[in-house]
Length: 439
Image (cartoon, rainbow, N blue to C red; front, top):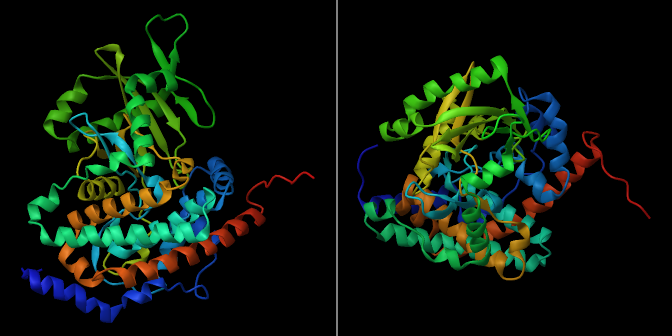
């Protein structure tokens, strides 16, 4: 791509309104959509069969939990309507529970987007549409009136627009290192930061491990089936062998730090909602004795749900690398142990497990919490897109943002309605056991 002036880039964004008018972002093509359960079945191929029932049981809990596991359905739905063609690195699974607190490389707690399994370069508005639907669903589940949930979406998108306009005026280097300071005062964010402060490696040690009988000072993973299961023998050896290619992708100083830790035990862990059924391993390390634990998560990564629907997208050479590089593109600060590896033909992301991590609960969104948190979501998505895309092009398309915000508010409400119907379809499908109501 040849260099373009700021004015040319802004005009390019403005011209994309001819391709997709801002008011048209409310479109949803219900008639053309495929069976949601067929899309789920296709996305679940190759997963651990014994865990799929658990995944469906989780998704049957509520429309919002269903939505968390239904990124493949929404990816297909978004592809049925026109898009702006303005690309950035998208999170791909932007919803209110995929933002959280974690420890930065310097030890400070930060709050940012923290789930990138579906990340890919794609139309920037796809992240915003998924976030809009999640805000409405979260609002309904936290007992907000529909008008309040829609108002929260409006605030999210307008905050995104305002922040993107600000980024368009800043020098590029300032955009790259921009930090969000005020969000710690927002109640749901503060709650997540408090949880993260408590989630120390020693807390994980107590939560995940137990003393080995007859071996003082020695610990091993607990057995908490199906969520946590110890792995031994040749299978554990294969997982430990995956550390060799992982070390090669770390920076030299991280390689040195990792070399001072010794692996103690290995386990299989069930995580998340959409990820249930993928292979997820944990390795427990010790550094300077038993009070210096390190937990690494080795998480299988499938192709992004959006890959089939993006004309210029090519299957990633390594999906763990896709996730790690997408995360670094959008986040200001990332896990210092972030990397990737492989076990046989399967591809994995590697990261720290539970090191000062904390997420919000939907109960944190009661009252004014929903709108305040929605604005945080808009601001952090704007920063991620500005870092990985072009804020001048995006702001050129958005203008003052009112028409775009109204369209996405409409979309969020309609897609939340459709998600509730899909959730009911799952509950009637026979895939899950639905408790009978008692009189």
